[in-house]
Image (tube, rainbow, N blue to C red; front, side, top):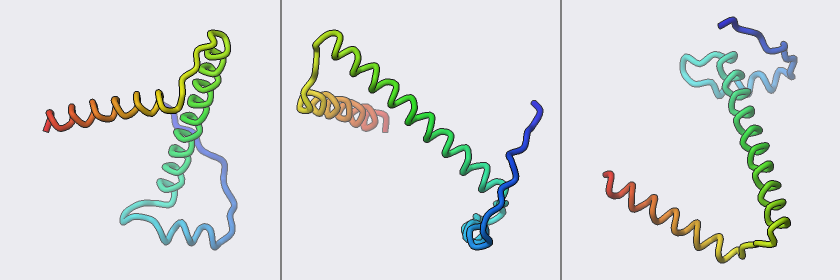
Length: 92
């Protein structure tokens, strides 16, 4: 696969120095910036997908008239967590 470059980025010297001060041993500034971009892409995609699901759920609730109370949702989430904890405990 061919690689591509991101645009050059001009920043204040203080920002560059702050980034360099936090580099891990053997980590380059380029690797640091690349990971930051990847992380933000994942975060933004997650937010976009979450919002799309929320809007679809809202539309479904409006179309069907079926709504769930906060108590019902929390109870179901607690059950999911309990099942996951039991499964993790059984696996260990």
